[in-house]
Amino acid sequence: MLKNFLAFLPDMDLAFNIHDEPRVVVPNDELSRLVERAKDARMSVATASEPPKNQFSKRPKDMNNGKRVEEVKTTRFNRFAHQGTWTHSRLSCPPDSQARSIDENPKDNLTAYAAGDLGFVYNVTAFSDICNAPSLSSSFGFFDRPNAFNLVQELFPIFSQSKISSYQDILYPSPWYWYGKVPYDSDRDVAWGDKTDSLYWRGSTTGGFSRNGGWRRQHRQHVVGRLNEPGKALIMAQQEQRDEQGNDGAVWGPKTVSRKDYAELMDVHFSHIGQCDPGDCDAQREFFKLEPAADQQDAWSHKHLLDMDGNAFSGRFYAFLQSKSMVYKMAVFREWHADWLQPWLHYVPLSLRGDEWLETIRFFSSSEGADGKKMAKKMADEGRDWAGKALRNEDFEAWFFRLLLEYGRLIDDNRDTIGYPGP
Image (cartoon, rainbow, N blue to C red):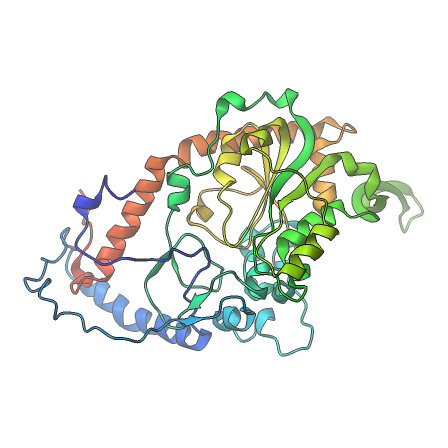
């Protein structure tokens, strides 16, 4: 992944996080102090310097003498695998945020990201900002018991493939994508009109380690359980209403319906139970209807594909976008492509609360009107087209190259005078 541009980078050590979970979270007061110091001191020096020089500093002659870096037997990292992480994860949130509230049961700041009676996600950045959502402490697996968690609470240059909003890891394109670990076989895809009109997902209970019933507080179990539960759900429907002047008219509003009437729209099931103590594994096998493991390429027979976080980011997302199907995504973990992919254009963002799930899928698959189906086909095409332009291996490499050029400048002793002056 580095080989095509390695020759243009300076000598530098890079610390890559091989775990799924991020590692760096700096307390808010310390983070704010560092940002202000950078604004007051470093920025003034940089703007006052001469035109930048397009050259890194020379490699020190004593680089390999073994004395430049002092060896230590201690580590800055603390290990919290299989333990709750919410208290640590919210440290970088502002003191007045919902996540740092001292109230007993603070409410999520839904107005920051959700719209309408059902809470459709209109701001993905705000939705994935854990400072807005204290409910994540008891509904998202990473905060319950992550499978691995090695944490440092000071600025430390760790390169990670994804992170939670409150973490300060440096994001880079995942080699998982670059190597095509989840391939898309176009020969096995089918035309839009030949696909089954249902939401499809198969996977395992990754997301956190379950102990003492912890799976009830983890996101994948919540999503799969709610999409398959009996009972009632909400959709949007036109309803007659009389205004203040006594005139009758139709307005859109939530309507309670039976989930069984829309059961054919859902094909979302676990195919494997794991990351749990024996008792919790048995409980989940009893609670969930397990389906046989499926080939990844079987997904292309469905119009609607669900993608969601596991222990961290989901490695299927790009393959889904490359397909001729429409993608729905529930993600709290952030990746490098956040500014490149647009929700409601390339994919449908879903909340973790789930009040809008059924209505979203019903709208894009309903035979009651043609608008939803037309929009679904258009979104599937837009996502596929953009993936072919912006999510290729050369795109990963170009983005990574620019990231490492800037990182090389930052760690150079002459960082304030290094830069590209222009043609």
